[in-house]
Image (cartoon, rainbow over all chains, first blue to last red; front, top):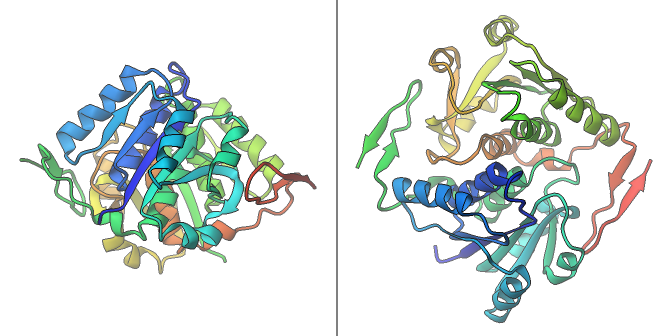
Length: 175
Length: 175
């Protein structure tokens, strides 16, 4: 599969959001995205994600200090499509069919407040239900619906560790 | 739909996990669960979730100070099935077909460390990929696969506010 999905995380506040943003990045990686641009300076997040990617395989990147306006502009200039996850957008099942044919997607994942400009810059404003919940669950459902569930069987080449799925208990394999 | 899904959140540490556990509860509510038992004392989480449920409708409950062993025992005694979300379990797409026919499910969502006993008590240990990511995204994908995506169109009766889905911008309706 050559589809390219990358996350742009905006509104991240280094102290308060470190854990949630790390969960956003790890969710992105586990569910088939190629990387995450972080529109803030936070080496802690970058390092946590790099550690997981190194140990668990695959080629996920995480880059901080990204300027979001430039990032969006360059993505569009390279014929990419921009999806903004927001509870105010069109409901996922109503719009995913229009997004799925595209193969280069930037997914904007905001923290609490998002600049109004983003709504206009996005090609698609997508809600995962119009209910308040979590940007982590929104991203997970977006990716799963975009990849039609196939991402749940992705392999991560170059891993040093792998879980052996078991009915009860914990089994890992060092590689 | 009369299926009953309830979350049991264990391993919650009041300071560190407040935000993640609140996201777990809100995700559960938005995606069709009936409530969350919290195996810890944290009125902050209970209040945040109650505030959302009151304003956005539906009948989601959140109860803290729940003893997890008793909770699991009573659930099973009432013919309920227990699902434990863990990266060590069987992969979601391989096992969801066996879980879907059941209509009373307790979903155990652990924080970092989970007592080994849980693996044996659960009827199903389910992994959402065997990769490290987030209990929030695992729960979201479990619920979406369990309800086959139909939960994304749930209504929340009694709401004081509702979002009007729009292509770009923010539109709400006071009820």
